[in-house]
Amino acid sequence: MAGNITFTMIKPDAVANGHMGNILNDFIQGGFKVRAMKYTWLTEAQAGAFYAVHKERPFYGELVGFMSSGPIVAAVLEKDNAVEDFRKLIGATNPAEAAEGTIRRKYAKSIDANAVHGSDSDANAEIEASFFFSALERF
Ligand code: CMP
Image 1 (cartoon, rainbow, N blue to C red):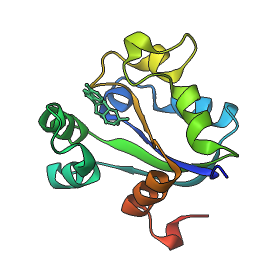
Image 2 (image 1 turned 180 degrees about the vertical axis):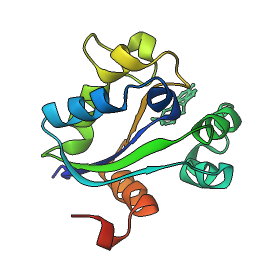
Image 3 (image 1 turned 90 degrees about the horizontal axis):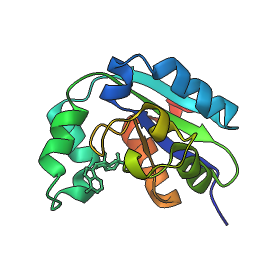
Image 4 (image 1 turned 30 degrees about the horizontal axis):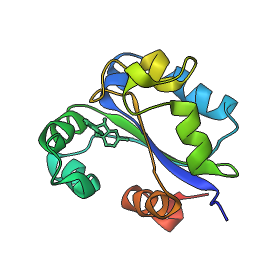
């Protein structure tokens, strides 16, 4: 059965470009409830650890540099079928391929600066949520 939480980050490009409020509104209008949220700035070591699964990929260095280049919003969101429905709401990883009306289509400029992160599985949603939030910070 599909899980009911996903993990997201509003990335440094979207925060710097003033899209934080509109993106949070899109999450809520999309039927997601906020179960945890924080505004923070990752160190390179923290970004590297979060994205360790991509360590061997050619874009890893740039990804880590970008994700530690400015503040982000991290959140745990709840909805039935959260992972799949959230990936539909945000659109394809590459904004050039994202469907009309999706968050990445509206607010992202490139595959690196793609405005938001969304978990790719229920298992990763839990791992990623636990990376940022203790049990006391999730409601
Ligand atoms: P995200 O969902 O945060 O997960 C990994 C990130 O790596 C991805 O979004 C993109 O921003 C970034 N990335 C850069 N190049 C690529 C690529 N070729 N394929 C997948 N992800 C990429």
